[in-house]
Image (cartoon, rainbow, N blue to C red; front, top):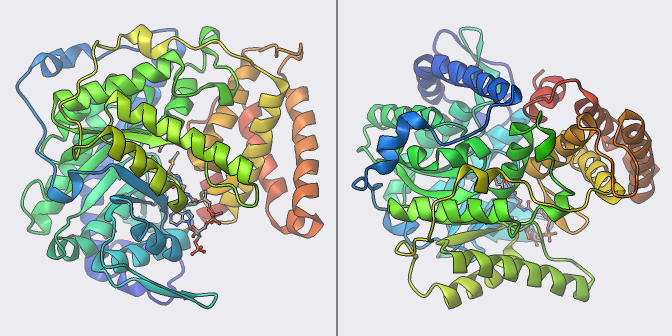
Length: 527
Ligand SMILES: CC(=O)SCCNC(=O)CCNC(=O)[C@H](O)C(C)(C)COP(=O)(O)OP(=O)(O)OC[C@H]1O[C@@H](n2cnc3c(N)ncnc32)[C@H](O)[C@@H]1OP(=O)(O)O
Ligand SMILES: O=CC(=O)O
């Protein structure tokens, strides 16, 4: 191993094929070049939040108006296997799910090392092993008497590395942790770029949680450096950026501009977007959102966001991907399953009609529904020529909707928050809860919403004031609900008490933690 590089995580069989000296040196080089910029951009996030907390509004960046007003620039056209992306399935990098997703019939598979994965060392490195075998086209598995191999035609592979905020605690360079994003990106591109190109595809990425065009510039510089180190032509790496933060929505066009040699699309990451809205307006009692279930894609500020993303993308020749309905197939209840399918179908019809070029599904059982909708409403490979009317204004993107604030909503936030964080602490980053897909982004909505309701002294529709006593009481009740649901034995080993502690601490904290995964990672996974 090169001087200065240290791996503190366990080295299990197969990990040595990913954590090679050359791959680690590649990651370390990116770390040396770009870690100071990452740190400074994370510092800038804190400054921006302090500015909004002081009562200043959020708006489009004045210094970038020339980029937005210049009608001539376009992004580089998409490669052939990212031209028609009508259905994309997402999922964690678990070996079986990677094979199932690639075989699902979707055009693309977003393999998630981020919010659908709990970032334990083993999940992250085993995920790289699985993705390396997927990129090579050789991945297979024997599981519970069933053989899993790839079909002749598979989905295009796109990897989602962690966001800028997370470290990888188990790789140190000169005693300093590397960024989770650089670790995930660096290992994936180093091991797979050539294999993917040889199979007619390429190294493709989904980039999460960007808050500023300078964060996009950082990714662009990393791509340029990686291509030059790997002797790949400019534009080989292709990115889709999730517009899933409120600040990111205000900079969508600048993000496209910064990444114009590498970007092919933006995506509406609705769940993180709601979380980011709450976080941005954490100190504004006039921007308190109603129950999580009432913040749908049809409320005005969400509808405007989706139209803004489609308009911005198509103006610049980029695809505009839709997002994830949280409904998943319901086993053993035909009527509930039909309702879930109808909700997904309606969501996809809204997206296709708005001008999106494709969409996300969370489960192979939903690929057919999404494809039927897009085949019907989008007969061409994409609809880049559809440009929704009207610019979004700052007011369009920030005016909160009316809606109920209920004890049932508060209770659901606590129940789901505990259930999700318990699964995350057990190493699972996406789970079905009450027939909905839950991942880190949806859990973030639950805990930030309660924090904001508490500090804003929200009075619920039934007359209860949201305070620490109410949150404590309902947390205890929901622990009992979980105990009854999973049984004493699993309750004792399944991390429910630890999850309730994480959730309660975050909701009752004086200051809003920027991400629940930061303290939880330090406490449970970093050692
Ligand atoms: C806000 C955001 O960031 S959204 C994007 C991030 N979130 C995600 O990617 C969530 C993706 N979805 C999932 O992880 C899963 O569908 C879950 C956790 C919600 C439900 O998973 P399960 O309980 O295993 O579902 P279920 O039992 O119905 O699975 C049936 C089969 O489909 C497979 N499957 C389910 N979801 C997926 C998926 N997304 N990709 C590939 N295969 C899948 C299962 O592995 C299982 O395979 P098998 O029959 O060979 O054993
Ligand atoms: O990452 C996607 C989201 O909806 O959040």
